[in-house]
Image (cartoon, rainbow over all chains, first blue to last red; front, side, top):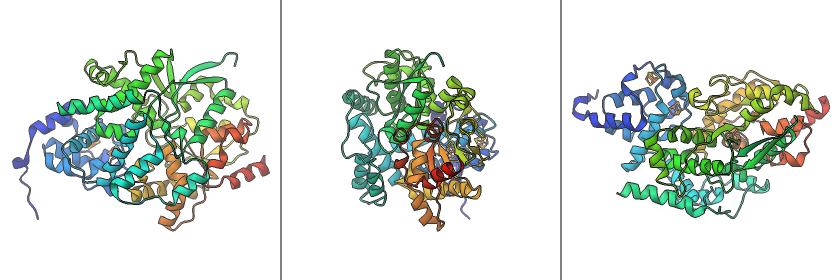
Length: 185
Length: 294
Ligand code: SF4
Ligand code: SF4
């Protein structure tokens, strides 16, 4: 049995930061488990969502920011809807993912690569160009995927080979640039 | 209806690509039902889920650009067919109410978003602005008792404080629309279960499992079709149905329609307005049953 010394790894400022960024009171969670029971991704999580909440209360920064669960959460908001204490659990998961990202963790690499490819496309064209997103993902992950779907979508006339940039393309690009500047400051 | 209702329209990126038939059928249904949709000029992507996974202010700014454009165009409300776009617009609207967050969002924009515009789902628009009674009276070609399973997806009504429409656990709006169209809406326990969302590309296994559960349930209930209101749900259940079949070793054969396609059929709209030929799983069986019984 591994014995964890939680007092060693307790980081109160981390819990405070999550509370502030998400606007949620973490101490309200009394571990009823409703969020975990309703979460459709529990089968794939390494840490069920109620345990993420517990680890947060205990200020376990490393455990929380490196777990796969925060990357697998699809923001379906079942947890938020069913929490008897009105905690917006999904918003907390979102904030954790954002922190985990900023600190360079990505235990689910392909998910991060997909998100990045998607946002690159938005930044470049103002709207998502589906084929471009796929090609970027393939280049990033060095992995071919969904080859069976290509012909299917093409046959239905749904596969567009060219992006249609919007007029305000540069405005959108600037949203991303200003966001990045804010991070670099 | 005597006078057309004019309302802002935000299609969202999928509706220009893999979900063209949703766009086409939505526009056609609205036109027939006396709703004039006015597309937000030069709208941009709301960032879908990747943006809020990265940062709430970034995500808020991407939606705020569209809300500002809508407000500038004099629109008092914006309807969107895509639940993910809807959630983003609603969340942005709420975040903009906080003066500090508003400042942070506006700092990213060329034109600051001053007054937020209300966002509603296309489904809500039809149910509340047109009404079930009116829809019923417009049906010329009822769906003759065909059994449909209405699948709302996870976020259309969640959380209730934010979405403010229908029931978060057992939504009924789509069921009522389909019943008005003459179908039998079977009580579908998987209405709000997640289909695997955007993980089809990076983690296909998750979509196989979660969409598999929904297809199983529809299959067990002997539904003639699944009916959806989300481009991503439709893609997972329809386009990926072959993959799920192979993964689970079960041969599914459930057509997956957008609710606007079936409503359009019942309203007697021509095929070209409904894009039925764009579906991956053939709707033939459903359509021939309709002919036989209709
Ligand atoms: S929002 Fe995330 S954690 Fe909450 S129930 Fe959905 S997938 Fe699970
Ligand atoms: S549902 Fe709410 S109170 Fe219950 S364990 Fe989850 S977060 Fe805690």
